[in-house]
Image (cartoon, rainbow, N blue to C red):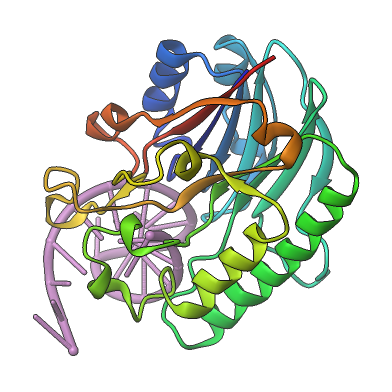
Length: 257
DNA sequence: ATGGCTACCATCGGTAGA
């Protein structure tokens, strides 16, 4: 089973790119972030025509997450992150697909830091970590994937010294990620490629992609049951070079059946 | 320290992204 995550940065602006990528790589499950569309403007027909069924949580202008599954309906288990009824952001959706629990997340950016947006990020991270712990106690195969907006280590940024005061790389963000991992999750891409420079995002500014000035911020966290089944992982870098493309590239893993 | 680019919403600039 191939599972992918892709921060599309506007699903309607990006539809040709998304459909081309789906056709060329045919993942079984796709988690999307930054739909940037209200619920009713999700391009469902185009997704269905591409062979996928979908659940999504939209929001006007910002955020928005979706889970697509090829030839099967994702069975929704959660919409919105538990722990704060006041939180209106569409940043988490979860489904069961062929026996696997799939959580799709768009963790807040948090800049500028310090400040209220950074506080929101850390609070959201705490709530997410609590939910992740709950998922682990069920002893099920679980994957938590999406845009974590965290640069885990210096290996994951083209010039780490430039990012020390940024919400993506501040010690609070990195230690929150480490604390999450320490529950027993595996960072799938890093496990298979412990020493390689791997990026999933490149700035639109200053020809970031051309200079390979990137970050690794889109991650796959696997529960122990799935860690054992991990056989491959990668980034579809070429998609970042297409016309009218997102600033993120799709990331994927492959699990043994 | 700033700005560079792209999207959305609603104009022709503001907000957000990372």
